[in-house]
Length: 103
Image (cartoon, rainbow, N blue to C red; front, side):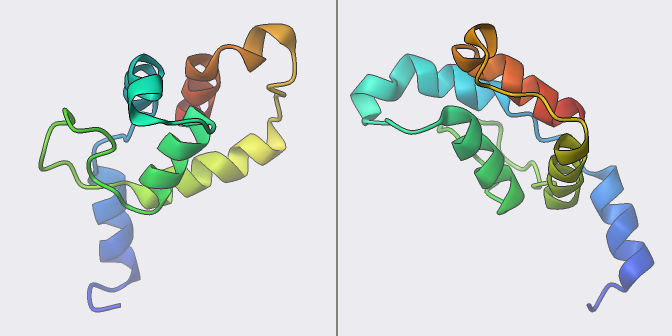
């Protein structure tokens, strides 16, 4: 509110794109050791939307989250729908995450 609407939008558009695939690959490799039993794609997306700057311990520091881009991508994914229930996509969370990032 202090920035104003147009300045806030410009700031959001200038931010680095928060991709989800690196977290998904990391979580897939470390899931058993870290007891991660839920959907890695949802974990990654939720972290980006909620503004978590580092989704995994080896993330580069200093990147600002991009919640506006993530939420617009989610909205577009509700229009351009794909299902993760198909055999090929259900076992490929990286493919689903790339779809979400590119919307």
